[in-house]
Length: 215
Image (cartoon, rainbow, N blue to C red; front, side):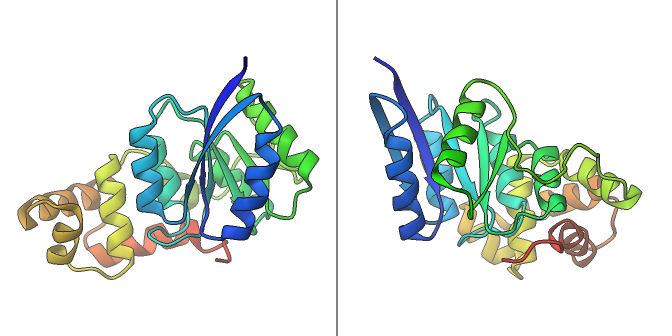
């Protein structure tokens, strides 16, 4: 009997419900874990290391733009992640794939398209919608930023996301359950990896990747 374990990370209950109904018809035994915020998605991925797939919204509480994808990709490298988003322009799709997503499903997709996308990824393929994503990113500045962002550790990705939300080192330390000195060390490493001199410049670089997106 075919069994599947799929994590759905999206903050819209109605859309999650539609996905659940669609996915339950794809196998005889489907376990679905629903998450309405990014912290829950991290926990679900940690508690279900054998999950077959995660469907991840780019815009949900606790995460900004591609930061969630980068964090999950770095921390759970074996977990296929498919982005589901209402923002489905070719740049967003392309950047999602370049940052490690196994597929991209526009929220406007029909049920058959969603099933096809999930089946493609479960079979080991990469799925992208009809928009042309075959051409690589051609902006040298964005290519450099993408390459540098990929070098961040999962914890550094989380710290950078929190910096972008305007949190202070003390607040980030509290949220992550570590010392303020540890956060300062992470910030220093982030600045070095992104080749910037201040946390403001680091946030600006992250924003250049996210700016094409509409939350």
